[in-house]
Image (cartoon, rainbow, N blue to C red; front, side):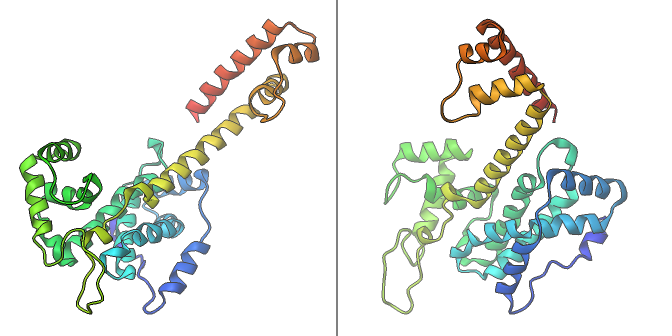
Length: 285
């Protein structure tokens, strides 16, 4: 399978970045069932056609993640290409039986390849050579609470959060601050001026990967909920609809008791049993 994927050409058309982005956004997205079937076929038969379909349907996600790193001053086309390599690695390793969607699983591999590319090609990043230093480079700006040098307490907090030694935090702060441009920099009309690292470090609060994963999880939950509700009997569906799925004028237990000519306690029992059935159905999907 690995040799087959190496033959798959996910390179950008030269001089056509805009056309490429238009194309990948038009590729239909796979449903969960389609994705599972393709991944199963890939695992069982090393089917490169299935791998290609999975890759093509996820290229739009790679492009969006790559755009969040465009502030490093590196070509967006190259960032996308590196992310595509990560996507192909993820497809090779993806197990559809683990429960996660491919987009969630692939984010680690996509971002890892982009990070490696940045570390190889951006001159300031060459100061980050160890695993601990790489953690700090991509996270230190977000962890700092104020401008200027960090206090000892802030250093210890950052070290604890990132799982590194306080000395490593101090060393990275010194390396970043010793560049020609200050870490937090200021605007300048000088033609030789280069923006400071604070201008282009990724803001993880609005990370596309986090948004994608959140949207995917929400979509899966809604789909599972609707499927589970359809498995209930008509009366139980109506009770849940009236009690929980209507925004206005939600029915009371007594309203439903009158409707079905049963006691309010019986309505409560039916509601409780329906909830249990929903929970079991959702967990087994």
